Image (cartoon, rainbow, N blue to C red; front, top):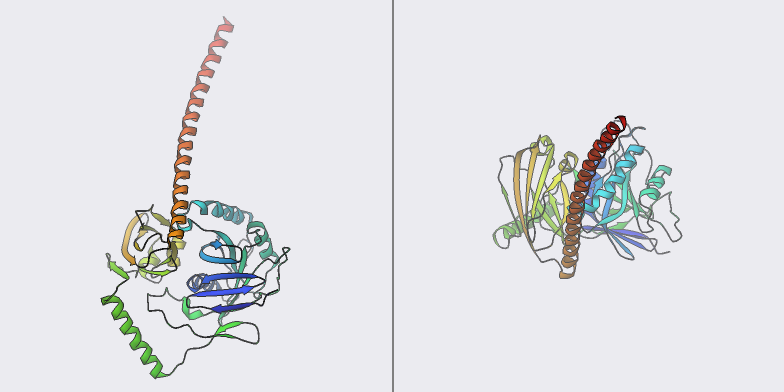
Length: 391
């Protein structure tokens, strides 16, 4: 068995153990962490646990997490993340609906995550039941979060080894998610140098703290201001404009073709909205993406771009009426041709299937109408036969 490790690249966690490698952007880990923390703070003792589906892409050895969706839980059995029969039905519906979700166009469920507020980074019997029932593929994974009121949140992946066995009692390698990073969505900033990775003796991956000298702070601030000025006045890759006074700070960040769309989840406009619509122009206009209240308040999502020029418009709604609007534009490097062709082919295939499904629905509607008309004629004929038999 290979050695286990979890380290931080510039923007991505690389977790390796049991001959398996998992890549996950820290932006996604922090997004999920915000939801975990929100549930953790809902109760003074223990908090409410959360869970969700992880979507991404895979090959023989590497799992890449690229998006996630929360799993609704009515918590019928308390604050723990224990799915009722109704919750499981909804989860099955989510898995089926993901195939037609434009945000998940070329992705598949690569696993799920769950938070533990009363136990550690380990798999419970209920976790293993969900893992086996809904994510049974040998390559699918489980991610466990363990929030703490006095320290940073610990987390770890769980995988199936050869033969299907699972090390339940602990993750091969834990890592930490900083509490301070998930308060609000991050603004677009120049990429900082990665902090050096350190492996502690207790087996928990951590990040070495940055130097705290005033000279370093002033120097970093000066470099940041200069970089921002160059980005704005020299080679701007991102152009953002507010249309509505309620500025939600819509921003775009690219990572290897994954475009992170973020907005200020703490703004009054977002908190008061009950839904939103996202309009995207990327090698042509795409179908609008409807966001429910929970997704709107999450403050971000991931879109897999097809071109180097993407326009995004976010419209916030209350009771179906627009109450705030903002747009942003990303101009950057082209997506690799092979990947763009693959995503475009998948999108075109999905569109063809949707057209065919609509045609079949119309055909079924016509057949149902014809059947009803035949039934009416049959009843009339039976009544006529009865009248004639009575004469």
